[in-house]
Image (tube, rainbow, N blue to C red; front, side, top):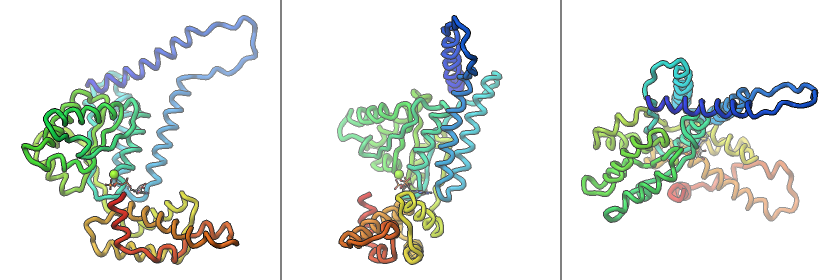
Length: 330
Ligand SMILES: Nc1ncnc2c1ncn2[C@@H]1O[C@H](COP(=O)(O)OP(=O)(O)OP(=O)(O)O)[C@@H](O)[C@H]1O
Ligand SMILES: [Mg+2]
């Protein structure tokens, strides 16, 4: 209920400002040529709508993630309808948007959280909508009092936006006596105390996150939204590769795309536990770009086309050790 009050507060503040600015307007003394009056309310709404459309576009640009996109749309629609209901003084359930993101590395969790934060800011659910990404070491201290201090610092930074806790299950790693438990308690308290100013997203591997939620029976109900980030298929990874090279103003030759497709298929079939999905693709492309540079740097005659194309040769020296090494570095 309190949450919805915030909508009306935000909007009535806006209305008040508009009213004041209208009242402060001085009437022209001479007859000025009539200039169509700009309706500030419309401008305000259009800007917000434009911002939202831009973010929806960003989300749509992501390859796959059908269910994630659906749920983000659902959240957006729900927030909007709550606001409209509020205008008619209809009852709304309290809006709790703390979330759990389950998925393997490189499946887009941080990317989606970042877009969501900005969208919730446009919708006036969050004051700022920025994202602070932390992990266990940023929250758990080494002596009594240290954990509370660390958590407070991170919460302060995230106030007005999203506190995104990666590998959140590791907070419960040490059991009852570990300071991780204190971190969980501090965070849960902050979720209650600052529920209008901060959204918590806990992220991690599906199995570990399920186990984590079972360690503390009160936790699950505090996170009503659960999003699954499935592993990408080979086709999706290739599509991501094409997008990533295009963003950097490069292109893949047919040979390079074939080679990359085969390589990714092999990696998928070998079913590695640390397969890092789109992040692996990003690392492979960045490596190929460096190899292309090496290939061209001593040539004195080159064309625009050659500077753009990444060839099979640029990808062909990928070995698993290299990509895994990069994975740990990333
Ligand atoms: N669906 C997608 N379409 C295009 N690019 C994507 C997609 N998913 C991820 N990426 C890109 O892959 C990289 C890794 O994504 P991101 O950091 O969001 O993954 P993550 O799930 O947070 O990984 P981790 O669990 O390891 O932190 C980023 O460069 C991101 O832009
Ligand atoms: Mg991440």
